[in-house]
Length: 327
Image 1 (cartoon, rainbow, N blue to C red):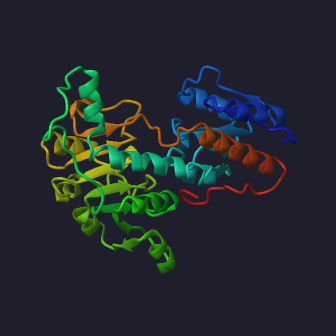
Image 2: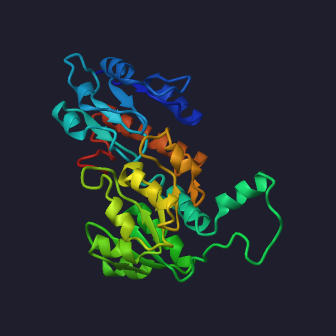
């Protein structure tokens, strides 16, 4: 390979990022930002040294199987890599990089917005006002729940989970968490968080449950019908991670029947398609995958992609190489 790799970007990135890539590499951009289908992705991987995909691209095993596959580096835009078949990539000797940590604060901010917005019924209030149906202030009108003193259960205490805990402590929430590995005691004390080794106990005890896990075989629909049933009737479920962590049909049924207090969702099982039933229930705040949607975060992530490609093309191991799951 020459020192100027051919790079194909599957979606539009920040102008500064695309401009920097054009300075350094032989770049092909996606000018109309239309997500690539399987055929387009296969064609791209036959014609580039580096593919820069996003969460909307299904980089499955079939794409690595062709004898004429040219790609040697997949420099993912974003931290999550559950849309990439890592085993197939490894077998094909294709390196994978991501951009961990860039969107931590942005996603934690969105999580806190949902933690505040659902119990205080912000979405319902906005709809009422915009529909011209608000009759004015009333002592019993649009009552919600305060969050101070409530128990926030965090599932997944990585970068984002810790950032959420840090914010939540300032709002007076009692923080409990479940994680594959317990955090050091000093970090627990700093975050004001207590460890719960049993996931089901945490789910049943939480007033607000927030998900911060990668999607994989172990976490697929981890919040299933039985666990949703075990939640308190006035509890709230928050998800800014991956839609596939929740059995969406079971959640919708629980919301329709008033079995839980509500849900704040930024991700969905079949996005961009959203279940029509979910759109009809009122006790929700629904966002269109905005967790990382800041100018600053998106540009920083793009520049991390540039750095990974440049270091790799210089013959060195890229700093954000994914070895197993999420780096």
